[in-house]
Picture 1 (tube, rainbow, N blue to C red):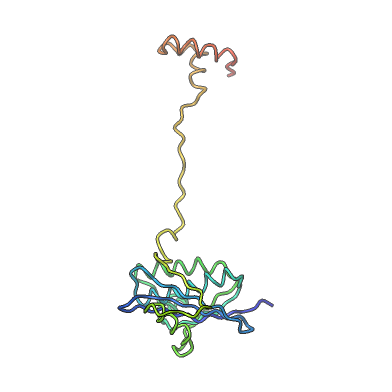
Picture 2: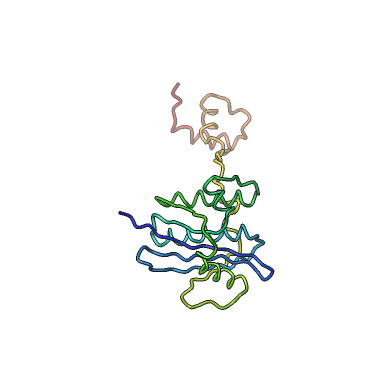
Length: 201
C-alpha cells in the first residue's frame, strides 16, 4: 500500500514582504521543511496558493505519490474542491497551475484546516516575509516570478511552413522546354544537371 504523506502549508503577505512555507511529513513523521520568499507583487491569496504549489513541487521531487495538504485558505480550498469558482484572473492561473501539478500524483487532497493546525507553516511563512533568519534545516529559496504564469498554458500548435523552392522545379522546366526565361549560363548549368534525370509521367 502506498504511503500517504501530509503537508502543512501557509503563505502571508504584509508590508515587509511575502512568503510561503510547506512542512511535509511522511507517515513515520519524518519531516522536510521548505520556505520561499516571494519577490513579486502578491496578495495573501496568492501567497497561500504559492505555499500549496511549493508543497506539491517538493513532494513530487521527493517521490511522493499521495499527499494530503492542509491550508487555512478557504479561497484556495474552495477553488480546488470546486465548492466555489475562481473569478480573479490571477487566481484562475493559480488554479490551473494546481490542476497541472496534481496530475503528477496518484492522489492529492487539499483540506481546509484550522489555523492552529498549521502553526508551524504559518510561523515559517511570516519569518520569510519579514526576512527573519531561518534555522539551518529549512530549505530556502527565492521566487522572483509567480509559479502560475502564462507559460503554464500549453502552447498552441504551430505549423511550420517551408517556403524553400522545390529544387526539382527548374530541372522539370528544362526537361519540358519551359526554361526560355533563364539566363544562358544558368540554363547551361541546369542542362548539365538535368542530364542525369528522366521525366516520368
